[in-house]
Every structure is written in structure tokens, then in C-alpha cells.
Amino acid sequence: MIEIKEAISKKELKQFVKFPFKLYENSKSWVPPIISEELTTFNKKINPVFKDAEARFFLAYQNKQIVGRIAAIINWLEVKGQNELKMRFGWFDVIDDVNVTKALLDKVHTIGKEKNLSYVEGPVGFSNLDKVGILTEGFDQIGSMITWHNYPYYADHFRALGYDVGKGYSENVMEFKNILPEFFTRVQNLVKKRYQLRALNFENNKDIMDYADEMFEVFSKSHSVLSSFVEINKEQREYFKKKFIGFLNPEYVKFVLDKDGKLVGFGIVTPSYAKALQKMNGKLFPFGFRHILNAKKNAKTVTFYLIGVLPEYQNKGVTAIIFEEFHQTFTKKGIKLCVRGPELDDNTAIHKLWKNFKPVVNKRRCTFKKDIA
Image (cartoon, rainbow, N blue to C red; front, side, top):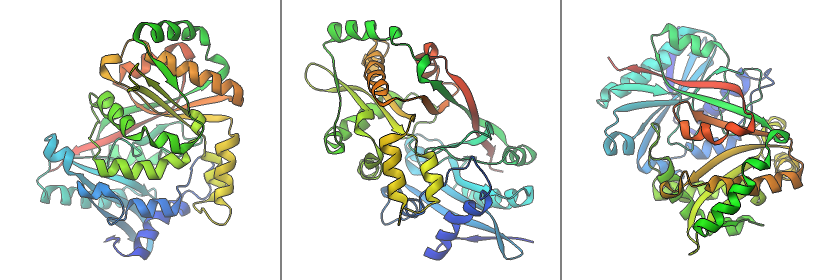
């Protein structure tokens, strides 16, 4: 018998967060989250996403053992502001039993029906800055801080239950030695002169904060055309600034300014924290910070996290400036491998951006969706 219980208390939410630690304890590809960070994400008193969203967290039990989890999410900015009647689900993990998956998803469908929503789609988070998708290829590849990992049977469960693919995503790796500067060095010089632009580099995280609000504006304007885009409110921006900027190596943040000092484009790369997070196993203390700091300073693999250019500057070569700055920094730091996080299959602009760098697709993932009956 499968029993679904809502995780409400601190103890239950901690069980919700820690379930995948048991499920993936023998996996070399799974990258654990930081437990305290996950709990903060789910704390309605701390995370401002709950101003415009709601979430309920459920655990599946079988023989008194936890065998699955799921978060049922509604983003009201999406539902009311965009008339997208979507019931989201995320933080989905389960043993290889399709009946457990069905029981968890039935709970999500029930909530969606109560809220008069039209369909269920996931796994997704609250916004575009959260993790996304069920992994369908690349199970032997190590995960990252910005993605979910899962076993191959996850997708089989969704197909067996009549779900269709919602959105497809690919992830790529690029050997740094294949990123040849001739594709952007000359162009970026011309672009700087023609549009009176300049690159801005950073030496500390504090200086990045001065431009963080502008960065979110550029991000929103440049990504609003994507099929998955949902606006991020001001409170969320403040929250993300405090949560993520500390993880950034300032050398890996590149901005492009116009002649008036206005931000027109940016690129953010993070050192790969995957192996550090595996060593930490979810805990910052007593030695977790040491692993994070070591990776921040010495990792030879980097992850391209965000890139954005104002619409009026797109297709004008602004990214050549960003790439030139990254190339100089990566050369100095001895970077060997560049990893790109999930990118929508229908985002043709981003795929064209990397075509000269010999990218290799190493993972594919997708969301699954189904109408609410």
C-alpha cells in the first residue's frame, strides 16, 4: 500500500530534502544539494517567491519507508499574468515503482483541478532560475549545482502514465582548446568602436552587487521571448542576489556597458562545484566551506550559467566582447572544460551562439506534461 503524506513540519521537510541522498547514495553522477539551502528555499517566511507562488510538499510511504517525493507548485504570475493555466511539479524523486510515481502525480493533479488549472508540467522549479527537466540521456555524466539528476526509469514512468514531452533541453561540453579566439577577437574590436561599448571586469563580489539590479533587467528583457519564461519579482531578485552572488568567482563575471555606463549585456560562469558538493554530501559544516572555496579558486571546469543581451543589441556582436573577456580569463586560469547548462531546444539563437566552439551534446532532458482531467 502506498500512502501520500504532506511534509509540513521542519522534521518532515528535512526528510523531503534528504530522501534523494538515500536514493542516490551509490551514484557517481548525482550531485547533492546543500541541505540548509534547500530548506531555506522551501521556507515561506524567507523565500520571497511565495509572494507570487505557492507550494506543497509530499512524501510517498510504502511499508513505513519513504519511497518518493514531489513538490506541487503554482506560480500565480504565470497563471494570472500570462493566463498560462499550468500546475507545476518539481523536486521529484522516486524508487523504480510506477505506482508510486502515479500516486505522487495524482496528488498534483488533484490540487491543479481544485485550482481550475488546465495541465500539469514538470519537473520545474518556481522560475527560470531554478532547475528543470527529467534527464533522458547522459546518465553517466556528472551532474551540476544547477541541474537535477535522475535514473533512466523516471522517463519510463511518465511515458507509461500517458505523459507527453513538454519542452526539450540539451546540455553541452566544450573543450577550451577548441574555443578559438579568431571567431570573436576581431569582431569584438569592431563592435566596441561601432557602438561605443566597453567590457567591465570584477575583482570582488561586492562590486558585482552594484550592477545586480541592472543585470536582472537585462536578463528579463533578453529571455522574455522564450517559451518557458516567467517574470521574477523584485523580492526574488534580492533573494537571488544574496543567495548566489557569494558562489560566483568575480573573475568569471563579464559585463558590457555602453558609453553612458548602462549595462547592455552580461555573461556569468561559475566554477564547477560538482565534485566539491559530492565531497560535502549536503553539509556546509564543518568542512563543506573548504571544498567550496577550493573549487571556487582552483576548478579547471567551468559552467556557463547565464548570458543575456538587451534586445536592441542582439545580433550586433555583443557576445563577442563577452567571449573575448572569458577567453583571456580562462587562459590565465588554465581552464580545460566548459560546460553549458540546460538550453531549450527551440532557443535557436543560443545554439547559433556556440556553433564555432565545437560543442558536444552530453546530456538531454525534458519536462513532461499532461492535461488535468
